[in-house]
Length: 193
Image (cartoon, rainbow, N blue to C red; front, side):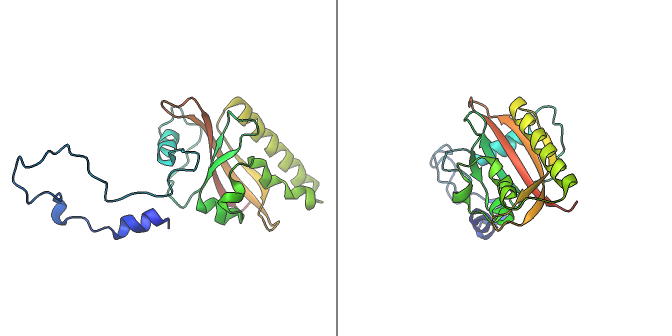
């Protein structure tokens, strides 16, 4: 559970849904006075300044989705890449992604998503069918990124410790309102195939 979730769950809301100013007589003070929100959400903004909640709303509000992602909560392994920078570096990764792959968030941010395929060079597979499937999945993923199309693909990836796993990766390209940057949002699930 993220720290902001713990904070939100332990927050003491006023009883019966009353506002903190419920005891004040009508007309006392302006209802438009700025107040600090009692629930803050640290960790939802990446160092790059990306608003992760806005990204997720962009994903779920996208027109004509090709894939149903189902319910997604804070436990989903998530990455966000900037498609306008050569190499499409990861600009955000959450703790669930770190737990899935074994890489810390600091090790991931700034890298291309291709780093999950890199250990294959150290541990080549003797299974030619598996190798052909891996290459085909990588090509499909690269074509989808280049054409800015959604894709959902099973791809062989490697954890930091070299352990191979099948990643059901859903990549959704989005552009946020008032932002000219093209992002790719990746949802990662370890799948048994």
